[in-house]
Length: 44
Image 1: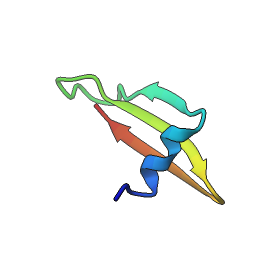
Image 2: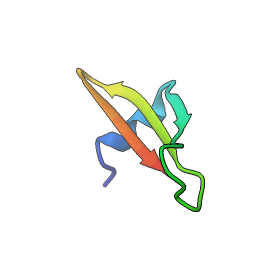
Image 3: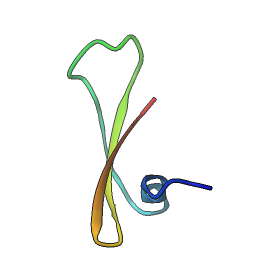
Image 4: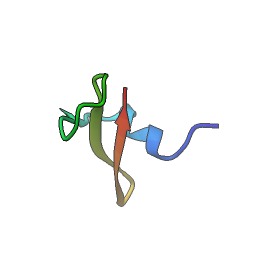
């Protein structure tokens, strides 16, 4: 079963690299909505 937040990847999303700290790997943040709620998902 997928999480609700994973559903943002079914639409056009806003993606930015997370450069707030040196994480030792590239981290991305995605923003979009599912229904009436907005989600921000961080992933590598």
